Amino acid sequence: MRIAVTTPTGHVGRHVLAMLVRAGLRPLALARDPARLDPAVRPHVDVAVVDLGDADAVVAATAGVDALYWVQPSGTGDDPVADHTRLGATAARAVTANGIGRTVFQSSVGAELRHGAGEIDGLARTEEQLDATGAAVLHLRCGFFTSNLLTVPLDSGVVPVVLPVDHRMPWVAPRDVAEVAVHRLLAGWTGRRVQAVHGPADLSWADATAVVAAVTGRPLRAERVTDEEMRGMLRGAGLGGPVVEGILGMSTGMRDGFVPEQPRDATTTTPTTLAAWAQDHLAENPCVDVDVHL
Picture (cartoon, helix red, strand yellow):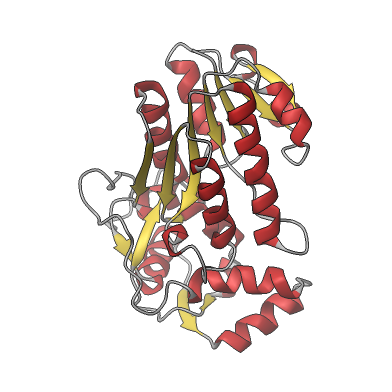
């Protein structure tokens, strides 16, 4: 079985690559910068130097592939939804041109709305494009990644959010997403499927900051700000209008009465707690045992 993995150095992709190697396969890594691959894994994978923005190169690199793990990086251009739509067209073209038997697409909770969820709308377009191929496609509707905390200025002691601080949502560790993806790639399926990946519990920003504060020993709290205040912060960071709205919409689109299409159950719940993830990635001394269970 030949499985291609995109973004193989990303938060999820690097785990997918390593898990496939441990399963006895030699996956194909579609990497823009192969030097960033894990040196321990590199001898066990094939590499195609590819920029996902180059559709012809992606189609050529995936010739002969049986299965594809497709991840689209956040848009870096002026319009993130348009960026995702272009990448989705590339994925669909590769699946069709090469007869790729099955594709796992890393989507997001909120893509089921199809419109009104900011940058996630671009993932919805990709779901539709892959569905139109008629191939076996599985959309992973992932919750809020714990790794997003790596971009938050925790030293400030305050995390500004536009959601109510007690608004609960699924939080998931990237490694758990990878585990679900690999199980699906190896097991196979037919037709169109959707698989939510919700992590072990729904947490609010108040819950999450309390966990991080306990793990790191540094005070941290969430503070709600208005949508316009958040727009100002994002613009102050140098982001343009469509990018700002793409980021903001990922929260505002799922703020009022949104319920994920897939309910939390045994099929969507994964094991890694936020506390465990934070111990590994945020704690100064990861060996310290902190009594936090969320």
